[in-house]
Amino acid sequence: MRVLFSGTSITCGTGASDYAHSFAAQIVMSLEKDLKAKVHGPNICFGGALAVTQLALLKHEGLKWNPDMIVLEAGTLDGFSPDLFLPAMESIFRLAIQRGIPLVAIHPYTSYAAGPKKELIELAAAYRIPLIDMGDVAARKGLKLEALSKDYVHPNDRGEALICEAFRELFAASQPVVNSPLPARKYKPNLDGVRFIPASSFVTTARQQPLRRFKGIGKGAEIKEAKIAIRSSIAVLIFSFGKTANLEYRIDQQAWTKAKPQPNWFLNYALFNAKQQAPHSLQVRLENPAVVEGILVSE
Image 1 (cartoon, one colour):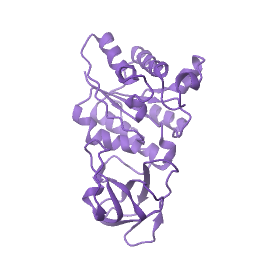
Image 2 (cartoon, one colour):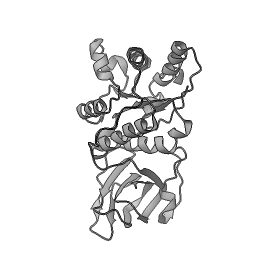
Image 3 (tube, helix red, strand yellow):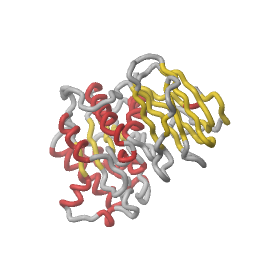
């Protein structure tokens, strides 16, 4: 059995004393004990990931593992880019159902930048995706966040064990739905066809400094100005700032739009949605060189 884990640094086990104490490792061990079978737990966690990043990683990296189940950390940092959160999460749910892969979503208990929880719970219910709300789990057990996390974000060993316990209770109570019918799409833009184009493939003026943050999906590049031709009406620019927070982009020679970065956050996303599905020209310019990872396009 292969259980694929997807999430942020929380899913990577940050905060635990070691990876063996992470909830991912504990879930694998508990499933082996309960099922009396060998369980593999590939982990495509990515520190700082948003739902749209997880969607790209699942498509480019996760599905290669042919998982029998997906355990998805959901909504942890999506308050940074709420316009992308629910469309991307819906595309993840649809992808799992279309592939016949059971999925369990876990919404962590943090005090940071979570996406809208109410809408996430409603979306999961619409797709019959079981969702574990760790804030609710902790409240029912009378546990406060400071007892479960040193930095109020990453679970300590006690917090990791609590996530595994909640998963085991859910798994014992009801098996995740596999062949659930797809409801009508609720959120736009449609990101089902998303794919990643690394910056290294479209930089026109650059000091090439490859990055490997996307685990094989692509390489970023430190750039001053770039231009790329895309065939999609929807694209998500992914960038991280060095010395500057002044990045502008435009499509088809129209007016420049200034990106709105999150202060003190290393990875940012800028969404543009053209009116027509046709070839477009995307230009990016920065006041000082900064790292552009690439773009996600939905075709």
